[in-house]
Length: 207
Image 1 (tube, rainbow, N blue to C red):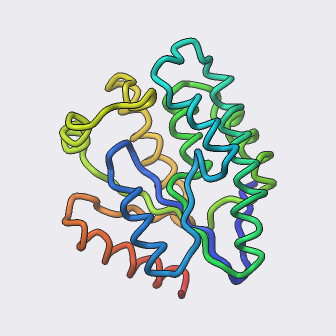
Image 2: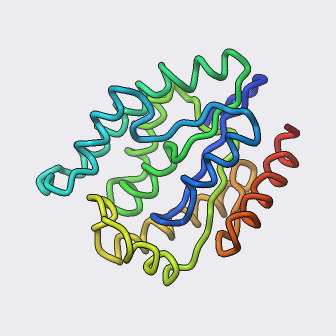
Image 3: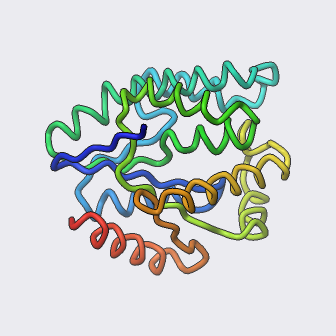
């Protein structure tokens, strides 16, 4: 069972495929709400070291199961250092990615059984999942154009079929759980997308 935070602090995650713009919009939303801005992976000092391993393009031998466990370790540290203390203080948390990225990337993308990824993530999170997930949806041709002009990390270098599975995985999760997910069209200007995110978050969460 997915448990969400119901206290005064709200836990919000931005999700989406590579180059969808979620990192930019996480910053804008956090500023708008006066929230704690963080990310997975790498939201803590220990997490940053784990992120370096995960994103290093020289790590060709990293197994899919090891990838799941490394990300779960980052997540557990993130919960202990950032998410739980911030929410306990009544502060909102806006995270660039969350446990749902593990379901999309390691589950749908890599083919690790979804329930294995879910249960591992849930254990690492002690049941603390985002209360609201904003999925920024951008067509694959636009994503490919954006990716073509940047240096790619280990995940970004995966083939097109992998990224198609990831994107489909996000869409599947959003469709299955409209109570916790909102899909945002990411093809507009930065200001237009930010305004949509702002209004939808305030309407959904009343903040």
